[in-house]
Length: 130
Image (cartoon, rainbow, N blue to C red; front, side, top):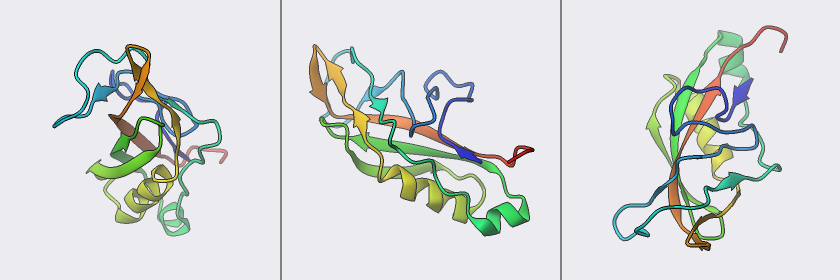
């Protein structure tokens, strides 16, 4: 099953199954807010996991699509980029399609909602029993 972050080892790649969580979110560069983010964006529990395309499942394709999401001050995804491919375009495209529909509780700085850019790994694995 594809899973948003939650079982990764990177310090910025921790999360939960609702669409990703960037516990160490960084303010966006080039005109983004300056300062320390005091409240990280939290994924909505209604965010849907990415589809695991039937062709990829049949062929046993697995991998991690590393995405980067721009979130506005309301927590809406305004852009989704593929930073590192899973190795399979069909998995990468499914991850991007899902991420573009996600919503987060906004990040805050000094108690005010701010726009941020967050890393989000999407892991595709064919675990036994699924």
